[in-house]
Image 1: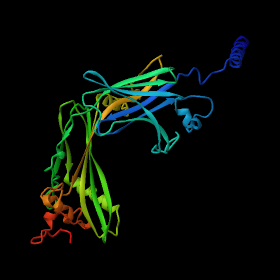
Image 2 (image 1 turned 180 degrees about the horizontal axis):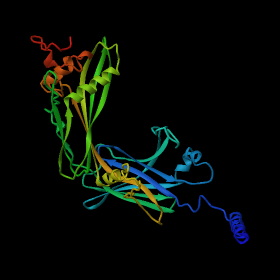
Image 3 (image 1 turned 135 degrees about the horizontal axis):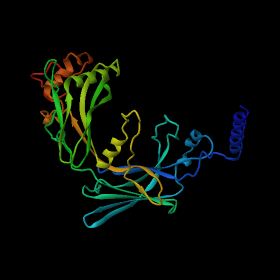
Image 4 (image 1 turned 45 degrees about the vertical axis):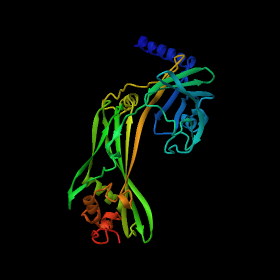
Length: 366
């Protein structure tokens, strides 16, 4: 027993001696990490890229996160080069700017953030068949970050047709589905959103209101045709909810237009989103993905890719001379104005074809 007890004392003394002589460095050797997010879109004339650094240091990390300078590199030279048939076409050295749109619901500094940007005027947009190469020189050659992407292009939406209209009702309370057809171009993932714009009137004054309806997001491959379903009953119920949240004193409402927004993402963006979806595994282990690389074995995370955005505005009618062209067909307009779901919200139609002096519709505006 005495030998056993002596052994325990010896072990305890060794551990105590080691704990006095050795310190655990919680910070250790830290290598700066670049964090880069950039999406090019030929529909844009200003192209933004966000570049930050991962930080570590003594003290409270939450307090450090609230200091803007802790999140930026001291010096960056950022360029984007455009390559197409024949080689280099254009080159841009990006400028930095401060914007005030950063979400304040977090531990990091907000609402201001630094972004890097370059511009392409509408007369000279990004090219469909070009490759764009990003190059970032960090702190005068400490390390470099590189990536490249092709431009998403070639998407077509049938809502852009002049005679396209939404058909949500066939007969009273008999609802229909309108399909929004999209040709994918060279995109790998497509999202379609429908925004409904209308007006709430109080006497002769009005307030513009709207609600957005996500018709879904689908995986695809280049050259495929997709349909996004917009169901009539859902449309009228969404309109009802929007009106209920509006002005209770409104004495009438009128439909204005639809905005169809189709967004397609490049293959790199699709892969990045796929990898970063919530894990369904109990182990919660997930791979990482980035198309960025860095010199000198520096770590880098993020994405540099592209998307294409189609924005199509469909007015209720184009002009009095073309009153037959409707964004919302006549039966659907009637259901909006006097149907079971939205009838109580005092919609009327100011479409010239519904207010013909010799035969006005019962739901025409006075």
